[in-house]
Image 1 (cartoon, rainbow, N blue to C red):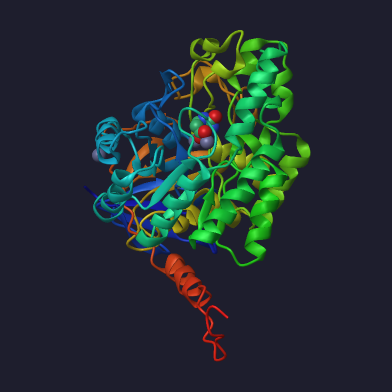
Image 2 (image 1 turned 30 degrees about the vertical axis):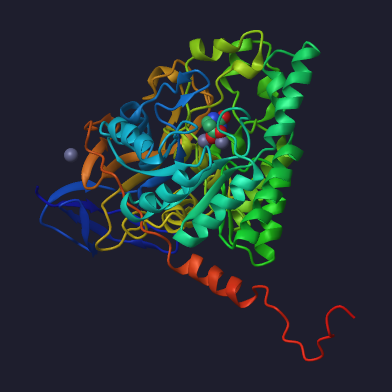
Length: 485
Ligand code: URP
Ligand code: ZN
Ligand code: ZN
Ligand code: ZN
């Protein structure tokens, strides 16, 4: 493959902004500097050359609520690349009672179609000796160092506190990072039943059944359990002030807790569920639900101050036909929304163009922080010599109106329909391959490779060192009373 040179652009990383050309050979960055030559040139005049987006939270072809999410590894990763995202992290979901390693084979099969690189989190959906043992194989041999726990979806994916504690302790031993979907699943299930009994069966019932307090409580509980187990914690789809507050407070107290707002929660609000059109409301049903403006302001402030570190999509797209499984019973509406193609342009438009985020902060929360937290930096998330050439060349003047008619996703609508975005990829490169070229999609099915992630060294080590230092110890006493007196 001849070298590629990205010419005349401004390199923007999480900590630096500077004019330079970037040379790529055999899928990696080999030179960064002025006036580079000797390869096919891509003109980045007027553009920002940034690490490609990493989406730490997607569900492609996910078996869920009696169906499968409609975007698979082909359409989902094509959508991501079209919007400048070059790596996705999906969740391997064993059925209750199923071997983790058997489930992983299913995910390995599905992901062979990926257009961009991908990695996996492993979900802990049940607990037992087999899970305990297989977690070690998953970490040491399968390149997966993150384990997801659902505190909601009672009767399906949910695990209880004793299981959380057991799994978190195992994560601590293995140098792995636990993730949680934090909502109180027992309370949600009871509220759902009550709402239905009272005749609240429309999509607004979904929002009523999952208030912010339910998420805040579970976030606090997960943080406490992680602290007891001596392990860092990553809270997925942080959507409200109560959850953010818990994360903020934990971090202020020296705990290693990360929070992940979604682009949907940052830009869409709860009024969507009160729309007169059933389809409109149901298409936006996801957990946690969209919140009000005060919660959105809290999430933005978290990104600005660093108490929240990353922005994801939780891309889990269902067609209108699938959403209609829940007509007459909102608890049967498949939970999930799309966003892979829109995350970067929406965050640039509503984050950078509004002055809430700097371009460097944008790179941090869409790419670099994620690569560091999930242990794939600097292979991913960096413009550095030796890093994979996963690059988005973002043209801040390029604009469009988001529409399902022109999207890559396989579904028939878009929750951001009608939003005008400014700041779009002129080029996207996936390990050096130009997959978006001035509006033209040139993805290649199967080009994506699995990204293995090593167990964590620094953070888990620091935490276990501290935990050992402050561990309970018997007091060495001098005056011991005679027994039986
Ligand atoms: O509603 C959602 N978020 N669907 C995807 C599964 C999950 O909870 O992340
Ligand atoms: Zn979730
Ligand atoms: Zn999810
Ligand atoms: Zn290829």
